[in-house]
Amino acid sequence: MLRMEKGPENDSGAPLALKLAVIAGSGEIPRAVVMACKERGVLVFMLAFHGFTDPDVVAGCDHEWFSLGEVGRAINVLKNLGVKDIVMAGGGVVRRPSLFGLKLDKKGMELLSIIGLNWLGDNNVLVKISQFLEKEGFVLRSPQEFMPSFVSSCIGAMGRVSPSEARLKDIALGREMLRHLSALDFGQGMAMQNGLVLGVEAAEGTDECISRCGALQRNGEEGAVYVKRAKVGQDEKMDLPTIGPQTLKKIVIAGFSGIAFQTSKTIIVSPLEVATIADQAGVFVWGSE
Image (cartoon, rainbow, N blue to C red):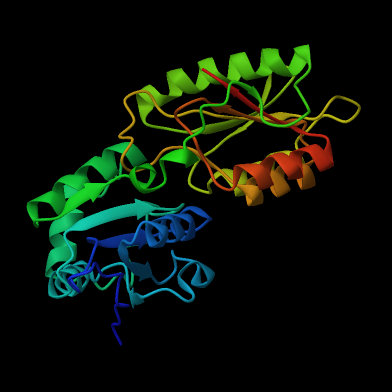
């Protein structure tokens, strides 16, 4: 059953704010967007997709579940609710699905024909999805538009710990390698240890890449660093790199020395909690251009 909560009203009794739909992926960003919107009086409805959206993400929020192929039904629901503004938030939003059992409706088939079966690069796919939604009369908004303070302007350490000279070299090398990889629309993250690439973030996302690379570290050496960077030409409305408390917990469990991010191009969810976790574990969170 669809349900939209009643929003705040002004003195005349009229609603104060626009309605916003959040296409919810996994991770901490969708919930952060919802909380930030509620503080600003924005009515939020979440679109959850079976096999992609974490149930915890939409718990307690106005939402409806869809299969990934029900593009037409999702569009009709939003239009019936009078929603025009959409935010895509969270990991796995454009993760390539299996075509078997997708059960595409008419609009789903139209979107798939636009994207193409080769599914070349997340940014490329996001741009095509954005154009498709705009053609349907929607306006795509960025998560950071509703939570601008989450985009970190930090240069240097967020907490008390700073990277060693060896890790600073890895950070510089990782940034440069990611810059070149972005030309292929591939990868926002990379694990480095003393000049060795342990792994590049792919379809699994940041947290899983960190976990995978933890076991690949060389024994007897300082722990690796995870480097996050936006792709060159990234559409910033849809897929900026994101770090949150869960990311830091993965860094600690994996035995990494820390994580580095691109200043002014990275969303930091709950920055105080991120810094606290880092300080308690003795790892660094390092911002640089």
